[in-house]
Amino acid sequence: MLGVAIDITERKRAEEERKRLEAQLRQAQKLEAIGTLAGGIAHDFNNILAPIIGYTELALGDIPQFNPMRHGLEQILNAAIRAKDLVKQILAFGRSGKEQQQCQWR
Image 1 (cartoon, rainbow, N blue to C red):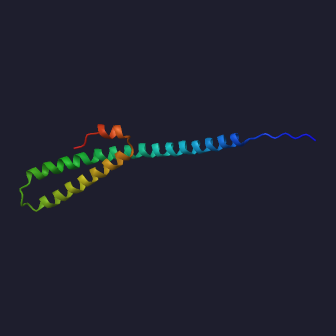
Image 2 (tube, one colour):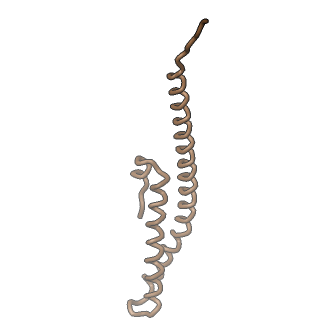
Image 3 (tube, one colour):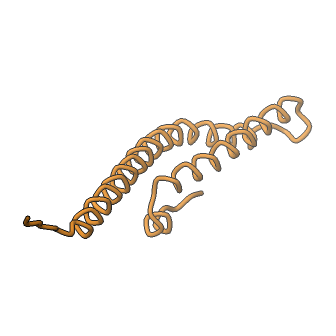
């Protein structure tokens, strides 16, 4: 009787490590895609907010302090500024630290 034994422990470990690394890579690719999508949406939204903020500020400059319309314009401006802050958060999600430092916000 003759027997042959081959230890495949290392091969099994290497295969499990490869599967783990592949799963990590897929997860990283998904996060990158989400970040890219979020960044694109945030930039488009920021392009909408810029004229809202700008024209509201111009209108506020032309309206006397006690005009009843002033309160509504101030509410528009405050909401747009909150939205701009949300855009910053979305962009931060999709950027690396270096890119965040390069981005200048008003």
